[in-house]
Length: 204
Image (tube, rainbow, N blue to C red):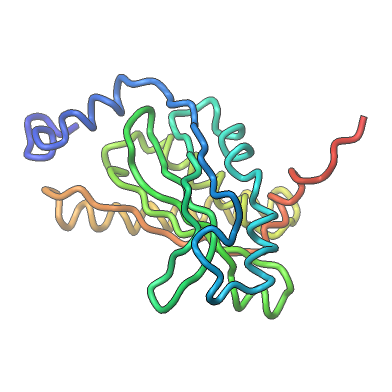
C-alpha cells in the first residue's frame, strides 16, 4: 500500500505487527476502586458508571475475539482537563501493537436529563495502516455498546452511518497530509442500554 514511502520506512515494525502478528490476550490490571486516584469531585454518578462498566473489558473482548483488537484495563481512574473526572481506562492493541487508548466515564448532561449515560473517548493510533474492515468492525461494535436499545434494523443503520462519519473524517486528514500517520479520535455517548443487556443475570 505504501511501497517504500516515508511511512513504510518509519513505521516498519508497526506495519509488520499489523500484517503478520497474532492477537494479544488481554491482561487486565484494574484499579481496586473508583477512589484509587482520589475523591475530590467524586459524585454518585461516577460510582454508578464505574460499577456498570466493571465487566466491560471482558464483554468487549469476547465480542471481538475473532479479530485483531483487544482492550486491556489499566490501573487508572482520574482523567480530565478542567478538573478531575473519573472512569475506566483501557489500552488498545491491534495484535501485539499498542495502538491507542479508551476512557469511559459519565456523560454528565445525559445522566442529569435521562438518569443514565456514559461517554467513551477513543484515541486510535495507526488507523490508516490497518485493514478497513477490522477498523470498521471495532468502531461498529463500540457504537453498539453505548447505544439506546431500539429496533435491530434501526440500530444497524445508525451504527453504519456513524462509522461512515468517523472513517470519512479520518480519511480526509490522511488524504490531506498523506506523509503523516494520523490519530483517529472519536467520542461515543449514550445510555448504554444495549450493553446493559449483557449485564443481566443468565437464566437457565
